Image 1 (cartoon, rainbow, N blue to C red):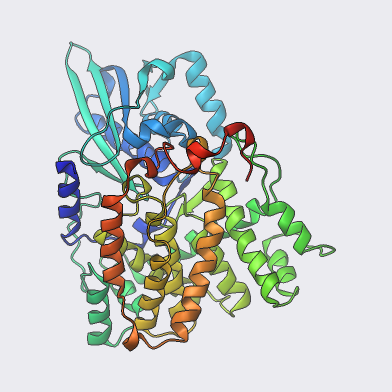
Image 2 (image 1 turned 120 degrees about the vertical axis):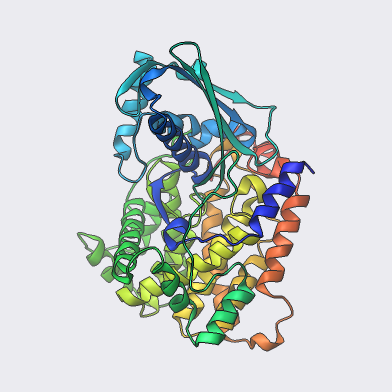
Length: 487
């Protein structure tokens, strides 16, 4: 193993204050680690130049992409994200419909407006290099910015996209450096359970107390409802968008067709009347199962189309939590703002424990680190939301991850389409099943703990061959001919 991997693990053992809004980020698809992370890295680098008062002195910029970012960067839009980040655009607010025109203009004009104000010569095909055979030891998702300044000086800064949109600059110890001191510091599920027992609070109540170290309770609640709004809009959009996904695989969207089939003869005009029509369709097992799949498909088809999504905790796994939360809202009497907020608080804490104890990056741990983690987050949140105890919620998270262990990341063509989109439906269903099992079980008799399964996940990640870590060098990516690929 490379020395940097030991270092990467060692920083994970230190306490890291992670907010719910670190786990749930509004951004643009198709990948949190390959799109959102490099976008943020480019923004951070531009801000660094500005802070040093060097932005106006820049003559040229060259971007080097290493490892997984190089091998699947084109399919994940890494080059696009870097250009937008250097241009000063923000993934939360930038109009996704303006992405293609802007990238086309940069290519045709061979000019880039650095930081939104300083024009430099920039030819994407020459100035963004995909170093397919090179990797840096700290993390497979690495990119370096090389800058030539007026006067002959040069600057180089390296950043690592470590999963879920988190970014670490070389030389920093954490992607979330902060002076925040939490009333209930948590690195493990045992520590979370300790605080629940000591205070008598539920998981979501402990998390809400911690969030007040950053902002008021009212701001947290408003922010989470805004996250849910973006999720709902994404589900609705994806459930009505037809056609084929970009990228050349000719993958046909399925959510819209499934939505039509399930609502044959029903009339609606907006999201609210749509969900009313869904609920009126009944509560048969197959019917609900189809809707959970539809919700997950919808989100990840939007994600694959450079749509606006929420990392939950990543873009590749962005459909699991919205699908399970929508299931809770529609079929489990969860259509209440407070219940939705509580669901998201619980989910975020479980996700942060996985990030601290293992990884949420497929380039580090395979798909178990994305779909597996999102399924565990959703399972815990659903369990507590349905009245389960704290221990049952953590048991549900363990069950969900236990049955994702070893899942590889093998995207065909380097695109977040096959098998990624369908895997979100599986992750959502597994989360619901794990919740049901935990609710009908006594945690006293459980032989596997959540902390134990997180350690196992990390061990599995370290043992996993790199070709199964978002490189498109193994698995389905090499065994399914591109010309025959169909979802």
